[in-house]
Amino acid sequence: MKGSNLIARQVSRLRYQRNWTQDELADLLQKTGWHISRSGVSKIEGGSICVPDFRLIWLASVFKVQVSDLLPEIDWRAPVVDALGKYINPQKLTPPAKLLVPVSLNPTQLTAYDKKIP
Image 1 (cartoon, rainbow, N blue to C red):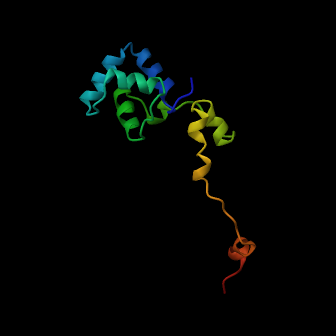
Image 2: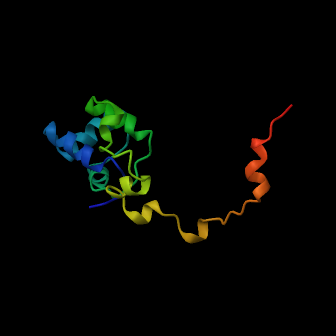
Image 3: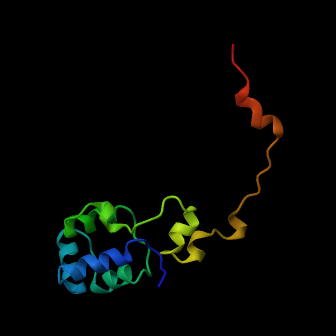
């Protein structure tokens, strides 16, 4: 299932490898200062909530892994939307049309930096 974060599968996998329950992971995270419940861990693993980048430090610390170990394998040659679309709900990747601002460029703007400065 595609969700709202990239780390869902990895958090679940790392927890499973350590034979921890969601309650145990929540308890360990709470001991480091993150006020999270078993339900919160479940929502992360289910991909139903976004996880702020600073929370990755907490997770990496508790799992004793690098932050990059929390991220999935990504094909960096693929377009970003395609690469992320394997993990993230497509509606989360495309901004609503009302947020897109049309841009028009004057052709003189495109060549302004080509001019040599004496």
